[in-house]
Amino acid sequence: MIRTPHKLIYAGLAELLKGIGVQVVQDKGMHSQIKPNVVLVDLCGALPPYPKPSESVPALALVCQQERDLSMILAKGYRGYLRREDGTDILLKALVAVSRGEIWAERKVLMALLERPKLAPPTPREYEVLQLLTGGYSNRQIAERLGISINTVKAHVTALLKKYGAKSRLDLVTHYVE
Image (spheres, rainbow, N blue to C red):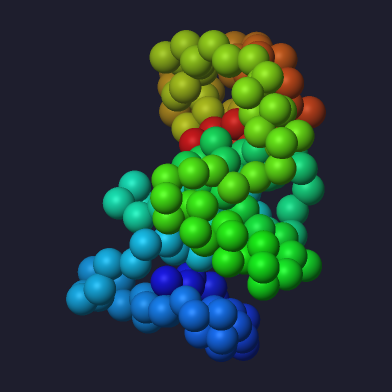
């Protein structure tokens, strides 16, 4: 199954896959009669946070992103990724590997994922602040909503930035909040 918002990309990938002997199942959502072995999800042009793949069918991401985003894609639950410039031989190997339950990724990306320190979860109040940050609330709005001072909100935001190594509120929201 191929998931992409681009008709041309879908048509090209479907034709390519059929040409190498892979049956392509059309994505009909909940009404699909045939369960695919792998879902190929086009994330090129998508911005974090990336959509979480279904747990019932392994997903392989088609990417154009930097390495930092690649480990994030794997952490999100994708079983692997391909770059748009990879050839059909790599595409077929990746589809077979992922359908077998294996992970398809470069060693350096897997190492970065494995070596990434386990981050402490946010405190309950930090979690509330994070939720409001993802909603686009300002410090003043968060303070009013939670019944705390603006300085306390700033202290929570600063603690979250340090805890997750984020450089800005946007970085915190897009890369560290699931």
